[in-house]
Image 1 (cartoon, rainbow, N blue to C red):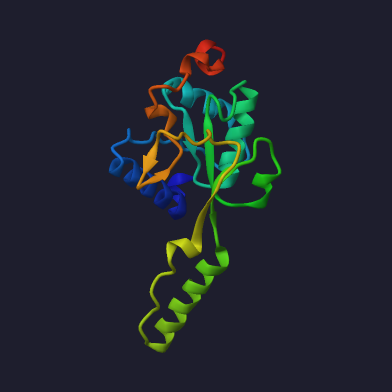
Image 2 (image 1 turned 180 degrees about the horizontal axis):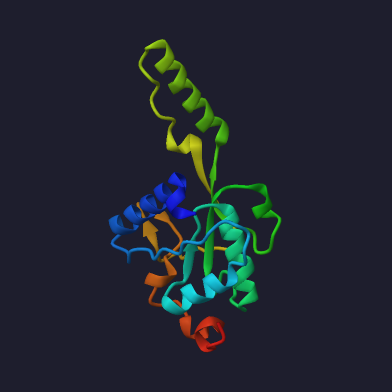
Length: 182
């Protein structure tokens, strides 16, 4: 649940900040309870309300896996019609088809940093610097994300072009766009 999860909220805020920095359209928020109920009606309703959305960034990999499953149930082609990326890097994401693109975390590095901070607070010493981001997070590519576009540049690196901002994206060929069956 977004409003009961600091991590989900922080991930959404961070994603929103990066979208604003890149002058992209602000992300739309879909909040669902993580109680195991079927995600399909939520995704269907969300896509009807936001027909231009071409990608989902889930606050965790389980939410991304639920989105992939629901997209398939709605006859939505992942990643052609809808790109999906998760956050955590759980191994099961590599066991599905398409494989899950995700921001993989390094729990050991995060835990070590947290324990060092707590121990320094107990000892009354200066807490260590935060772990470097390159030691705690990494991008793991997967089949759930549209392929890279050579025309898109980000700080000199080729990156995935945001489909919703891509004038060449073939939305007209999307099953989701051609049929009102969602």
